[in-house]
Image 1 (cartoon, rainbow, N blue to C red):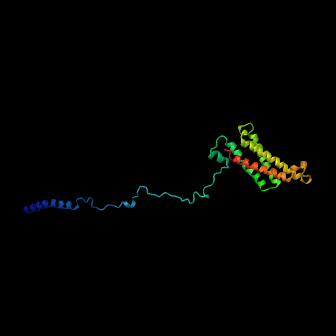
Image 2 (cartoon, rainbow, N blue to C red; image 1 turned 135 degrees about the vertical axis):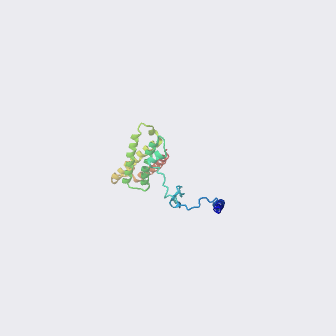
Length: 208
């Protein structure tokens, strides 16, 4: 019996040493068992870095890419350029520039009577409309308005002269009253008109 107690006593004394040894072996290692791998199903919530999408444009400043400003467009004059209160008059005046240039070209190219008269007729119809539109208004006193009316009247008189000359030419002698229908006189009148057209065109282009 005494031997049994002695054995038990010895075991009790030896157990703390065992526990101390076990603790010394695993101290600082934390949990030493097997953990499940959770990274397989884990999806990061951090945004991924992306590069901006840049579309390259070549020759941006070339003539093919940049179109000239449509200065002849009334909408462009009114909205983009933001003209002052006279812009409507400017728009109306600008419409006469190509009409005058076409008449100038018919004289320069020695076009026939019919083509010349048709261009002058179109000019006169538009000039009459402009005269009615600005009747008794300040624009009626503008130098550009007055010169436009003058050249329109001058062109009309020469168109009438050329039409009469063409009609009566076979029956007229170019002496006395018939001199006005002389081709040389008509050509001289056309040269005067050409010079006048050029001056008025430059004047209208300077209106702003």
